[in-house]
Length: 64
Image (cartoon, rainbow, N blue to C red):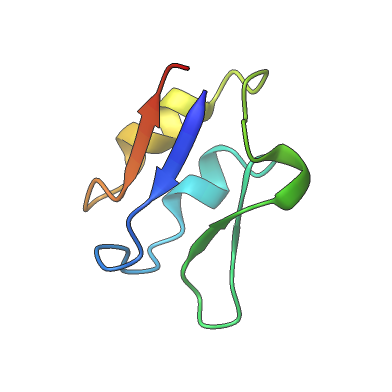
């Protein structure tokens, strides 16, 4: 699975981090980022829910 975060849209709400902390983190400015070792997020059961929880729909998931 390919995960993309639109950094221009992200407002730093942190819902992705709260929902799927094994895939997402927040950078030094408080915006969403992917954990480097989990960039595909394939085995995280909460990944799709984290994308849905984003209040500005900044997270896109694409099957590879």
